[in-house]
Length: 89
Image (cartoon, helix red, strand yellow):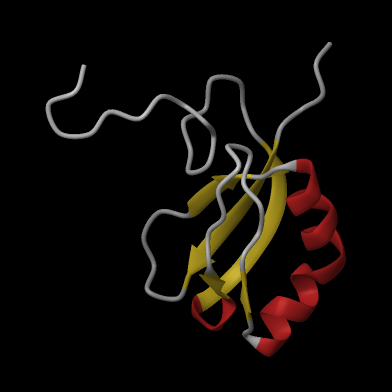
């Protein structure tokens, strides 16, 4: 059985649906140790995403955040799914 993929789930202060980011293993290890601190201080952090990119998160705008497992076939930010822009097929 494959290792479960991990995600960062952010609930923003303005409400709405949570933002979900697929994390690289380095991003998971880093956030496991720093997530509470980042939320308390409202700092900016750029975790490594599963597709090799990064995202800048301003935790001053995050009400709550947690690490979770991604369900199979989930399409989330940083998941490495094929991107289609404009009229590309």
